[in-house]
Each structure stands twice: as structure tokens, then as C-alpha cells.
Length: 108
Image (cartoon, rainbow, N blue to C red; front, side, top):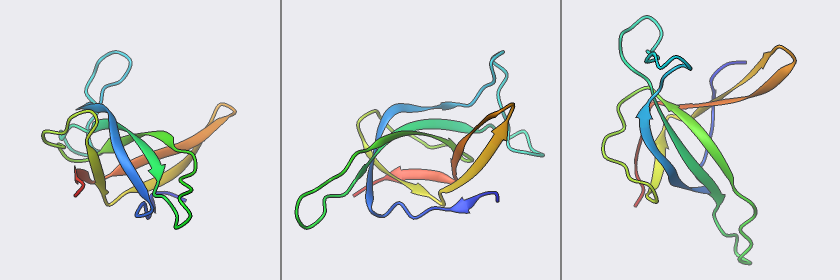
């Protein structure tokens, strides 16, 4: 399965690494498939919103690939992802999740 939509409404997302252009190990800019449009990456810490009894649960850092330029977003800001998806991958005996979004905006 590819690009499964994700509902993150129960989480607060805080930028822990400001957005940057996505590049491979040799420094070559990675572009969207079939275009010359660069992809971007941002790291956020996803923390569950507190429940009625005050329990918040554990959070996790996520690296998100963005398909549009994210604009001015600074470390520490609360943000929302626009059109977030997740995909499972497997390669050479390893596996994981790839997080993507169309963009991000400052949370209110």
C-alpha cells in the first residue's frame, strides 16, 4: 500500500529541525517525480494532545517530505501538515515508514 492518508488531529506537531531542500548523500537536490520541482524535508515532534484526565502519552520525532516550499517556519513553532500520508517500505532486510505531506502551515 502506498500513500495512506493520516489523521493527525489528536497530535501537536512542533518543528524540531527547520525545513530544508531534500538532497541525496552526494548533495544532489531530489525533485518530485517527473518534474524539476525540489522536495523539502522538515522534522517535527508529534506529541499526543492531553486526554480529559490529563494523560499525554509519549511522542515521536518524524521526518516529513514536503512536495511544496514550506515558507518561513522556525524551530519550535507548532504546525499542521497539509495532506499527510504514510507509506511502508522494505529494502535489503530493512523496513520502515516514509512520511509525506503536500505542505505545512502554522497551527493556531
